Image (tube, rainbow, N blue to C red; front, top):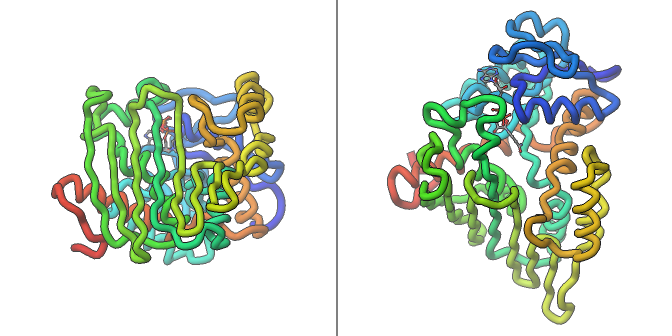
Length: 358
Ligand SMILES: NC(=O)c1ccc[n+]([C@@H]2O[C@H](COP(=O)([O-])OP(=O)(O)OC[C@H]3O[C@@H](n4cnc5c(N)ncnc54)[C@H](O)[C@@H]3O)[C@@H](O)[C@H]2O)c1
């Protein structure tokens, strides 16, 4: 569709689905028509919740898939076959074995808009770091490290229990996929080898096999990537990025180049809070602190969730209207899935795993 308001159905009326709904509503070019969620009773803030998918197709142009990870491929494929544009929350699929289902649907509808919600590379401070790496300012990159800490103890039971039952949510697919996407995008390469270790000393009651995971990625260019993700840190949500280059280095928004010294990449960090929630007392307080101290100070990371997610939603709407290319397409999300799967295999086999290994 190229004109008019994009009519959207949100699959999954939980935390991600409701956040998408708010962001779609904020963009003048979209309207959330309904949710699809068989487990939810009643409307949500005046938006009906449907339980029969077929009733939704005539009502909408686009679908945003915000359901548990293992359901993404099937819902996205159904929506593509119904002629809808599709946005899929990360991870794009819950395992590599689910990729062919989605790939086949994509092949049947090559012109359809298909986007994936990997927002980490659009965090303003990280986007600025990526621009600096891609411009060559830091020279060849030897090492990149990214952390993702998110205590899910209460969040995991807020809307549904899928993270707390069965195999739970894989911390590699559900959390580490964020720093994996960030590092792959930054280096613009897929690693040749992944080595992972994991633990469950913290949050032992979680359903998944582990709650803390560490992975080392070896890239064809010679760079090393280091990733840590957990769903149990007793700390506010935290993400950071360290880049060591031949000419200089970056720690979040602090750049160091020998001879030039430290430079705080101020504008990249502080001028992008004009998104939803910016008016809340907490956000005003954060902005004051950021301006006051200028550097990240616990518990405030440079991670600006709202700005990053809004960029994805706005891009999806603009892509539906033929105004912008999709920022995170299938192929880029598929390589993240392959890396997460290789890391899971490394955990099972207790050794490094090559990505081309069968
Ligand atoms: N990009 C991000 O930062 C981010 C943040 C949160 C969640 N997510 C992703 O969004 C997805 C949903 O996570 P969440 O935190 O919103 O979960 P949640 O538990 O908050 O909500 C899940 C919702 O899906 C519904 N649901 C469960 N099974 C369903 C099914 N088979 N069909 C339709 N609906 C079903 C539940 O009733 C619930 O309303 C996950 O893939 C997660 O990884 C991404």
